[in-house]
Image 1 (cartoon, rainbow, N blue to C red):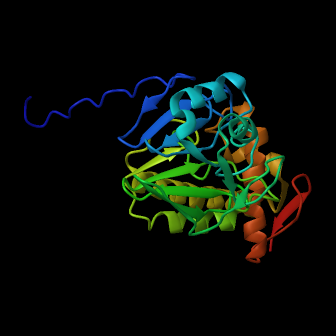
Image 2 (cartoon, rainbow, N blue to C red; image 1 turned 60 degrees about the vertical axis):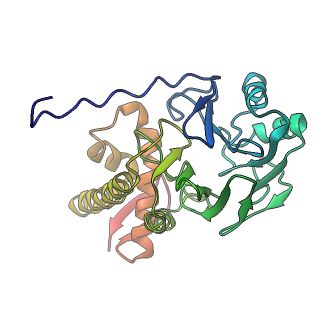
Length: 283
C-alpha cells in the first residue's frame, strides 16, 4: 500500500435478528425481531460467559427470540440482567426465567418487570470466567443500569449510549441533568468498547461519549438562544426551528428532549416554564 493512503475500514456485518454472533471470547449478541424507528434493527440481547451465562436485556416477550436465547445459552443461563424497564428491553425476562430458572436482577420491579433481587451501583456478579459490575446511570430512565465486563472493559450500555444515534430523554422519569452527570462518570471507566442496546459494537467509546456531551451542550445552547430570540415560545416551535437536521417524523420524539433541556435550564434559574405544551421564556 502506498504511503499516505488511508486503508478502507470494512463495513460491519449486517444486524440480523435471531442469529447469535460472537463479539468477543466471552460475549455473544442476539438481536430481537422488533426493528423500528426507535429501536433500529432491534434490541440487542447479550450473553456473557461460557460455563455460566448472564443474559443482559432479554428484550421483548417474543417466543422466537426467547427460544434463540435458550438455544444459545441453555441451562448455563444463571442470571437475567435488565438495564432498565422500557418495553423493548425487559418484558422477555419472565419468559426467559420460566424457561431457564435464572435469577432476574434489575434496579427494581417496575413497568411489569418482577425482579428476584434488586441491585444498584457497585453490585457485582463474580462468575467462573468473568466479573460484571453494575453502574447506576440515571437520565434516560431513573432505574437505568449499565454493566461493565471487567475482563474486557466492555460496557453494556442499554439506552444510556447507542450506536448511530443519540438518546431520547423523556421527563418526568428522564432527567437531562442526571443524564449528563451519568455520561461524565461513564467517561471515567477506561472503556475499550461499548455494547449498546441498539446497533453495532462501539469500539471508540471515549470519542462517542465526548460527542454525546458536546452534542447535548450544543443543543442546550441552541434551545436557549432560540428562546431568548423569541422572548416566549412553545416547545413545538423550538423543535421546528432547531431540529432542521432531523427528519420530521422524529420531531414528536425530539419534543421530549427539548423539554428535558428546558427543565434543566429552569432548575438553573435561566428560563421559566413547566410543561411540554405550555409557554417558556428566558429569565
